[in-house]
Amino acid sequence: MQEGDLVHIPQGAEMWLETEKGMRMQISAKPLAGVYLSTASQYIYRVYANGNWNVKRKDVYPMGDNDGTR
Image (cartoon, rainbow, N blue to C red):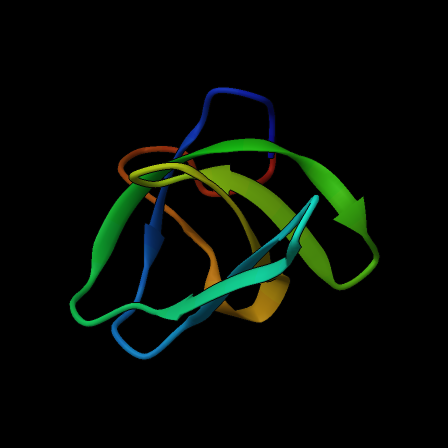
């Protein structure tokens, strides 16, 4: 995936972000569209979906014509 690619995040995906005061976490209540920002680690993507979030790589899917091979 490349920065700026549209992604799908399914309902029930764990999303979190470390802050100065600790950790902010939410579980997606419905499927979300987002934008891929970067790869945080082997298992985690950084995405923008109503804010910046870390999401498990297994819970992020490319949208549209992008099949993830670019």
